[in-house]
Length: 193
Image (cartoon, rainbow, N blue to C red; front, side):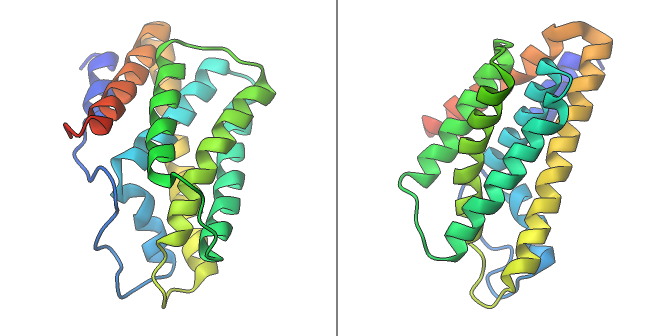
């Protein structure tokens, strides 16, 4: 299978689009935290897009962008667990997928600090959603460890996919994956998926 087709197929893996229902209403802890980021297509696509964009930027961005995401997500989760609600969380999450997908699709090169800031803002919304959705009986720290590990795994998958695509088909395949992420986010915003 050609890399561009593989990237597109991976982007279309069926999962829930929003809301993250049912995977821990009465449970919690590290297992819930590990499962939570995988329960929403928006989260999966954003985290993979961060990895792809990091590959496009190269060098220090390979670890700075994922680290910026994880740190800001943890801060957002702390806000959510504390009962602090950011305005427009779900639209912010969706906008982050659109923006990150577009940045990858257009191979946009921003300065490293600006790139890390874009990723951090996106992560704040994702983290707030994770923190606010932790079941009441769940141990917050273990749950946070779970979704930080899952997020790190998704970033690693994005970086690995990006490196694989870069070595086999140049930037075109990475940009195609970004376009797929962008398109899925737009379709989600329009309520098509």
